[in-house]
Length: 255
Image 1 (cartoon, helix red, strand yellow):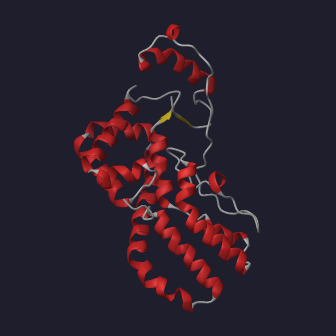
Image 2 (cartoon, one colour):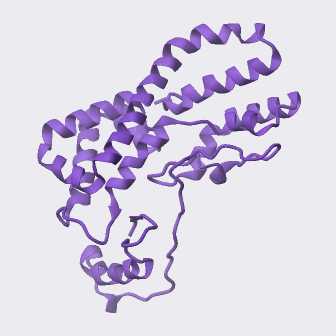
Image 3 (cartoon, helix red, strand yellow):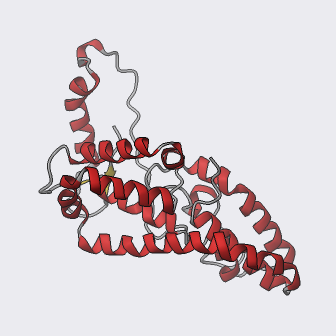
């Protein structure tokens, strides 16, 4: 069982979710509890933060790996995220230490705003378990089926990046468009589940995802040749901006 829970009053308690899992498991897995030999129960939580990646709060201190919040808020793929970001982080940390750019505002450029991660929060919110809701009981399963069915129809360029925790503007736009065209009946439940304010906030990150895609595709080739002509610290900061555009748009991923 895998579920998302918001830590607020009214949300299901973790113990309640575990008890419900045991009640549903025989039907879900097609096996009775009497036929199982229980060796141990693996049960835990993965805390994640909405405002991530987390910027550096202190001089000379940088969060790294899972602690930086660069992992997907949908799958919590911390190791995969660290692997993808390792190149830019290692070179950025080297430049920061070599040039003594270790103030919090400089180190925060290594964990910048990434709209593709922020846009992913809508998926988590849509699939979060709630104590009281007026959407159908099978809404989350229906939503998952609709999304993955559309991504499969759109092919590997859309499906594979998402399965590897990379959200890109083009594939996301195609998926959302196809879902609305082929499964319009699910839209009212989405509005009820996440709420209008959340959708409006998500729209901002979705537009920024498109903006970062534009910047990385068209502005990066213009700016990058000029980096060597800039003062060292200015060059350091512009390199971090170019990386933020690329990784924030998911364009570090190659099919």
